[in-house]
Image 1: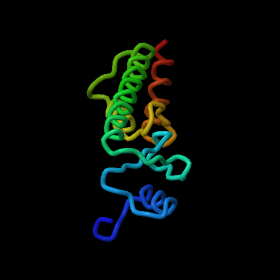
Image 2: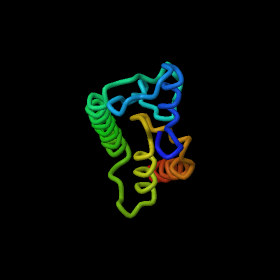
Image 3: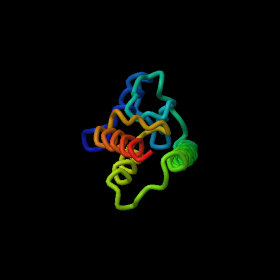
Image 4: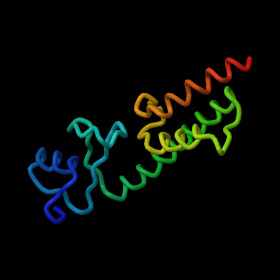
Length: 124
């Protein structure tokens, strides 16, 4: 315990196994969603192995997001660096915990995407 607080996922596992986790133990979220602290989604791992897995998962997520961005640019054209859309997209992209960007969580991005599609449809 750190000064009276503990991460929820660690607390849930500790309650389940009836002891405190050791410093060389880490908790892995099986589905990659850090806010999904259901016991069936949590796995005790060696901390070093968890660090390796986390880096691998993060790199895979970044690669998938870059592929999605490339597909967007292929379909809708290059992004203008001064465009508000780009900044909102990148913000949403970085906040997303998985490769599938749920734009319903980002109303500004949703509005900008709709405006962009409408604008491009009007140009054709």
